[in-house]
Length: 339
Ligand code: NAD
Ligand code: DAU
Image 1: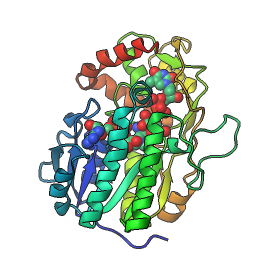
Image 2 (image 1 turned 120 degrees about the vertical axis):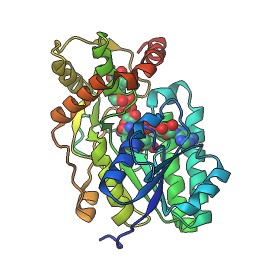
Image 3 (image 1 turned 135 degrees about the horizontal axis):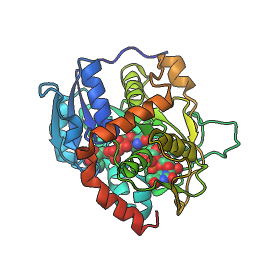
């Protein structure tokens, strides 16, 4: 059972100009009375447009680095909690250049924990199912909160390190913290480097989609809005010191997702290119979210993947001005990697 209800009046959302952080910020403003201070460094992945149109008296953007301890000291007094999304988030980038991942994902989480400790504030740490490594395609098991950590990529190993720091700061210094580990998100405002937006924008551009390896790798898809409602449930009603897995029973192979996208564009199912596989490519992720559902009564709203995907495709068709500036450089980077 939950300890009781925590009712923050203002939260700091790190990485609130990124894909999931901005979806969460919008969800909080539309679904609660809580105000938001977005702290975002605006890296290549951060775009203030993602929170444009939200009321100024509810949302304030502070452009800055989570590694900046002085800035954190300035911001902490006005908030009741920190919800920590900021990260370097893309596996392929972490393979090409791991250093920023260590700095933001590990040092950044450490700086936030220290700031929460100094100011006695609560932290919700947003993490990934990738900390558990991967499962075989024919394994009946899914990840649970008890699955041992076995990260494969530079990205997932830095997220695993950040989770360990949060657990240690809770146990040693009693920092009131919760952790969530979520599966692959889809939704509006996702960077064109990621699988679904890359293929959708390729098709809009008349370019053939690109599939890694044999295309049989499985990801467990969840809509970003459902991730947001789950994070809010954990922040406000979850037990301090606990970890919750977030997932919506959305396992699908990459080739099936791609075929669905191709169908939506009226294209032949075989109309794509096989490209070089990702080194160390995790085979399958699958989440058992029973704890979150049983303890907090959380349920996903987006249970029809085809419908959610169609809405996302529509969003990219309607928002070319949003993604176009990033498309050329992203594809040039992939081309140089043979992907
Ligand atoms: P994203 O790459 O779209 O956004 C990251 C945001 O963090 C950007 O706005 C960026 O400017 C900001 N940022 C980066 N470094 C920063 C720093 N040093 N200081 C302040 N801001 C900084 O990422 P996303 O896909 O929205 O992922 C958000 C979080 O959710 C990450 O922690 C990620 O590990 C986790 N997660 C993502 C997924 C997914 O499917 N994308 C699934 C599970 C968990
Ligand atoms: O599981 C949660 C994780 O999901 C998050 O922690 C990460 O931040 C997020 O980026 C995502 O990681 P993945 O590596 O699974 O996502 P990505 O979109 O990069 O790739 C999804 C799958 O599609 C993966 O198996 C690789 C494959 N792929 C990807 C691209 C970009 C392709 O086949 N072709 C592509 O062009």
